[in-house]
Picture (cartoon, rainbow, N blue to C red):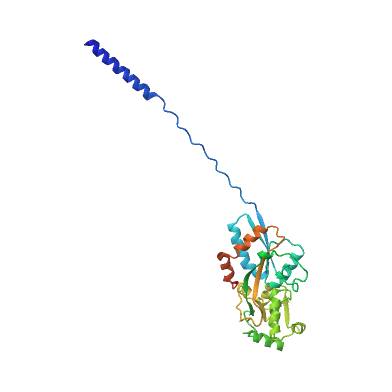
Length: 290
C-alpha cells in the first residue's frame, strides 16, 4: 500500500513539472506586417500666366485672378491693363502674353489670321483661333459729374449741347473701343467730331479709365464710358446707348499662339466662365454672352 501511494505521488509530480514546462515555453513571436511606403506628392511647378486685358476689366478681372490664385497657389496671374489698341500693339511687337481680352472685336481680329483681311490688314497670326470665345457683353452709357452742371438727362441733351457748343465732353481716342463706340453715337446724331474737337468742345482719354477720371473730377461736363466703369467709379449713368446708336459691345478672349504657358492660360480662361467667376463680372454690369 505504501508502494502504491509513493507511485501515485511520483506520477503527480511528473505531471506538474510537465505542465510548468509547457507554461514556461515562450510564445512564438508575432510576425509584423511590412510598413507600406506612402509616396510623397511633389508640389506642382510654379507657373506665371500673363493676361493682357482691357482697362475696363481692371477691378473685376483682378478679383477673379485673386480667387483663382487662392485655389491654385502655384499659379501667378500677372495682369497688364490698358486700352485694347495699346495691348494689341504690344502683342504685335513681341510682348509675352498668354491671354488677350479685348473690349472690342476689332483689336482681336487684327491679330487673328482667320479674321477678314479687311480688318487684319497686316496678316498677323497671334490668336490661337480654336481658343477664341465671346466672353462678356458691356453697355455704353452717358455719365456726368455728381453736380451735373449742364443738367443732362439723355443722349439727345448731349447732342444738343455739342451742337450749341455749351458743354465740354470727354471721349476715348479713336484707337480705343469706347472711343470707337462714341464715334458711332456722334455719327448717329450727325455730329462732326473733328469740328467739335477743333472748337475745343471735345477732350480725349487714352483709355476708358481716363475718361471716367475726367468726369469724376468734374473736369468735363459729360463723358461716354462703359456701365462697368461707371459702377466702379461710383457714377450713376444718366442714359444708356441703344443698339441704333452703337453696335453690341462684345469682349472676345483668346489664348495666344505663342503663349509661354498655353495650358495654364487655357485653364485660367476656362475658370473665368465658371459661375463663381461670372458672379463677379455680372455684379458690376457685365453680361455673359449667350
